[in-house]
Length: 426
Ligand SMILES: Cc1cc2nc3c(=O)[nH]c(=O)nc-3n(C[C@H](O)[C@H](O)[C@H](O)COP(=O)(O)OP(=O)(O)OC[C@H]3O[C@@H](n4cnc5c(N)ncnc54)[C@H](O)[C@@H]3O)c2cc1C
Image (cartoon, rainbow, N blue to C red; front, side):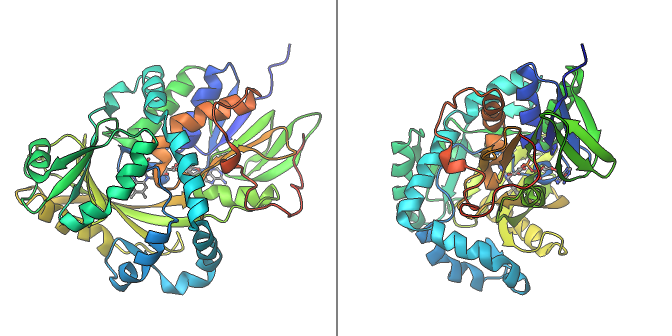
């Protein structure tokens, strides 16, 4: 009997790697394709936070209101490269529409339903892929330097509680017990005991891809340019190495999904939300939970190779030169929060979060196309949601009923009313 055609997963970032693993466990023959070595995209340098508390989309009225103040500070937590405004404008307009209260409420429920099983899904994937040593299941801390910011976050805490997130409020003293070295300026904190972190996000991707290859999966280096109908029920991926016939394809190419989705006749108005990291060789850091600063908008994560300072949002053309001052300013913030922190700054990195204007990922089958699936647009939560997305994609491919309502994540939600997809079989 001829071997069945494989299911292709396009993109070997954390989302694609987790999709490939879940499909493989389902007994599928899987081909994982990336134009680059696995995990070199946005998944390379993130903050490593399994952020189950981030249930609210950033497209919200309170964020919109804060935008002018944030933009007035060129080194603040949010920046827009003004000369890229014409290309950003359609995304910004949809962002403002998504920030209407009814839509925020619906998006919060949708995100919360996805995040609910994130930790459990990662525990299972880490065990299956031999990656347990990369996880720390010790919670996460958000610290506040002003009583006012802590008070203002009360509404958020209540929303989190309503959606089942376990939230503990701490005094400044209690926060300093949990994160020794934290400045006396911290007034209060929130502790999320169910959160977790990864001590090497890039190694997590390669651990999954290595396990995938060990268990018989095929990894190929190719740039996918589009799709064509093939014989029978098959789909042909057009790559820079020629066509590849597959049974079905899952587009999990992060920001690169935008072009592929267009090739499939859909629209994915994705922005590159650039963020930066700076490694600090602070071996004497005496805390082992990620510490986020509410006011400064960044996170310090203890990692295998030092302390990772990560954050900031910069809306810009992803191919424009990085603005390294944004990475370097993280060091000043870290030393202000932990005044005794020694060590010196090391590697810096910039990456582009793939973000749809409503801050919900696209997870689903392309309507009317039996064999084309989407799994992209995971914004600030790609690491957190990768294992859950993989599980959902395996269900979709197998035609099993989804364990949650996937309609808010419909990949064609920005396309409705437009012509259907052009070329794919099925
Ligand atoms: C500073 C920063 C901090 C962050 N912190 C966190 C955090 O703490 N927790 C969290 O959950 N998330 C975090 N994120 C977000 C997270 O990193 C992303 O959501 C996630 O990496 C997206 O994963 P992905 O697999 O979709 O995309 P990527 O990792 O970008 O992978 C996409 C892959 O597709 C490939 N590709 C693209 N187009 C094609 C094509 N046409 N053909 C072949 N291959 C293609 C690329 O080469 C790439 O390897 C952070 C992001 C940043 C920038």
